[in-house]
Image (tube, rainbow, N blue to C red; front, top):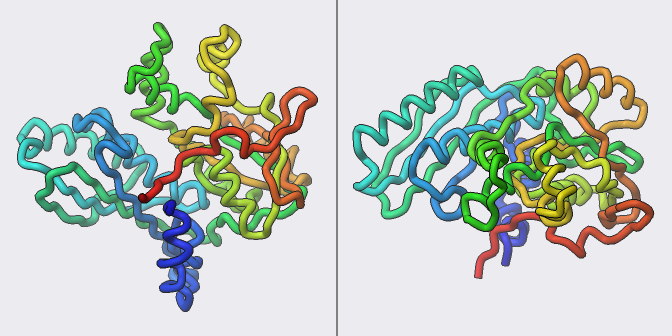
Length: 319
């Protein structure tokens, strides 16, 4: 059983009478009357991050939690933290690092710590609840339609390469620091947040992998998509490694932890989005189109193949 089966079978029925819960089919709760949005994420050492040094996990988990609201067009305002900590970590130096990093992130994203909880545990576990508001309805997963263009912000794949370096699967010499920073400190395209409602029909952040998250957008209306692999936005460092045969595109582009926005928009918005990208100095790339075929296909040169033939992304499996 994986996480999606667990939610569908045992948890979704519990929210059936609560419209604000969005049928547990999205990443947020939204109160349409009060215009308040809430997201919740739990992070476990050994699953979501490796080191217990706050410098190597705290910015990542805060930003990934904020991303759930930002990608819906919602501005985060407050956050709540729950720490489960073992005795060895409760030291002045460790807590001082926590304080300094949170203070820096609060200033960067203009948010405030508003509550939480601390408990004793054998394993470091952190839960983050983010509260935000929006004058406009959030852009949910369920809004995409056939013939919509598919867009991605920023670059993808860099964070996964950073994780590969941490796990000592690869070493890329002079590029190592760049990829490590991409993993530890993901760049969220927050400048797009106030503009999303004007153009996006559906939206999600790329946390589990581009193809996996795209499948969530397609699922509601039983749609499909065609993605042009040659149009995928890659950093110059990543592209250099591909050109020199160090890595293969198919192995890295849908592995998750990018926290870029994946959204769909009407064809009529192409010029406007191109102009917006230029005005915001934000990379926004059209990578494909939604269709009625009920499957996600990939195009490379003149060849088209089923996305299911490669790894779609990350899924929590329970045995």
